[in-house]
Image (tube, rainbow, N blue to C red; front, side, top):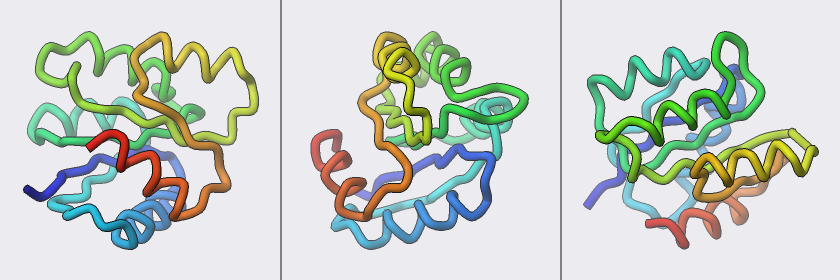
Length: 123
């Protein structure tokens, strides 16, 4: 069954790179949706059910940790795996993401192989 994915990052370039990386994995993709911040992502999730969310931590309007908290509090979305993709070097931020329910994290810059390895464990 094809996997619908939501990519949440304030950088359009990073969103496109992630799309290309997803295509390089052996995962059968359905829709790949994009959002520029947590608020936009929440709006997207109101009308789209996805099987995976890839989210940056540092974003304007609503950061990735606030977004993650809202996703995990929503009965419709709480079981959706969320992988944080970040430049954040702080172990405290990473631990906060895990505590909030993140399924894992990947540090930028990332490779296609790192994304693939993380996805294999989740889907």
